[in-house]
Amino acid sequence: MTREQAWEYVCQWIQNENLRKHLLAVEAGMRYYARHFEENEEKWGLVGLLHDLDYEKHPEPPDHPQVGVQFLRERGLDEESARAILGHASWTGVPRDSLMAKALFACDELSGFLIACALVMPNKRLEEVRVETVLKKMKDKAFARKVNRDEIVQGAQELGIPLEEHIRHLLTGLCAVADQLGL
Image 1 (cartoon, one colour):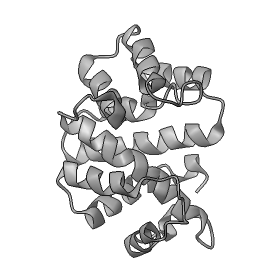
Image 2: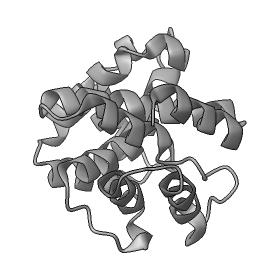
Image 3: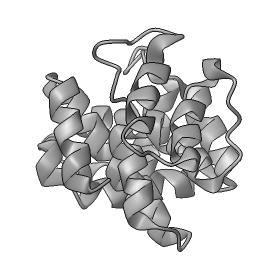
């Protein structure tokens, strides 16, 4: 599957612009980590781009992410990528037994939180967000209250990277696509 085909699927399945931006952010984070770990950047990027493909139409367990993965498998998605997408949702019971799966889980919640942090910056720019700001905002339960802070911490732990470093890495990855994210 090419990046262009994957984006066509995103556009067919998802109309919500913010959800599309979330997918672009997770894609950027996955591409960053693929380079960091010397893995296949295209493959990892596609997993990030497609991980919530079915979320707009099927946001609840057990349908999400099963419906999207089934659709993608029918179009040739490899098993490692399918398992990574399934594993990003803990309720599936699919273990995150690959580095790609761990990276996807680690990027998912944190990318949304970083975007929320950028939106409250004076100029609404990702480059303004600092690690210290993110850590402070994580303690504020009223801020971006739908973001699961425990999963952010767990994601960094599963990747084997200190939380502060993980935040810094993901900020770097997201800044590369800040224009696409409107930040």
